[in-house]
Image (cartoon, rainbow over all chains, first blue to last red; front, top):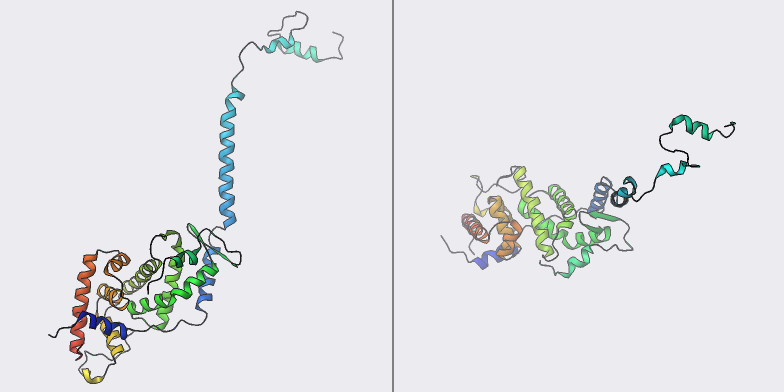
Length: 111
Length: 198
């Protein structure tokens, strides 16, 4: 078996390497068209921004609601008494019933 | 064959939209304009075509399809390209994978159905039937297994360092050396059988 010098073998291969056929005319444009088709099947850039913006706005809204909701649902303390609004002339204001309210709001009556 | 690093910055312009680009092409994690893609194609299509042709030993139509497949994979993978890596290594890797996927999925063996050269193993064929040196190389490459052929193509035809071949193929450098050794031995035996003396 004869000895093959590696460098000679490499040079032989490089000098005689198979040459690929030339690119067909319009190959680049065909690729761009294909990529454009693939691109059109993806969500558009606007859709990505709209989705991201919507998600962000929702997160902000939720955070805002969570921050304010305790103030909305927690009763205030310190003596505000609703019944005082109805305490006219020293009349008892507690639990007077539906009938009283109806009568008091009926300005056209003789009472 | 190797390309300088600055090319990658110009070719991709990641995150930068060129005002004159007529179409924006979105790739995962990065933007590449049609102009960028065209630049990339013009600079590397010869390399991609050669590697695919030499690894697959395919016909012209097959090469065209595979070249297109390689560039689509390049476009899709642009977001995963590490800027610190050589762009040519990255292109070599994608191209070699496309070619190997093709040869493996098609179950292509050394004697493929696209054989266009005379069958040297046939009784009528003799070394004197004057295969040109180019035909000899083409024939010899087809004789090799895919794993051996791709190593020989990258290391000898494209003169890549063994470490880069290992990186491109995702195997160890020791494996590259081993496969290259066997590839050279097979190719040498083939040349001897053809009466070639180097």
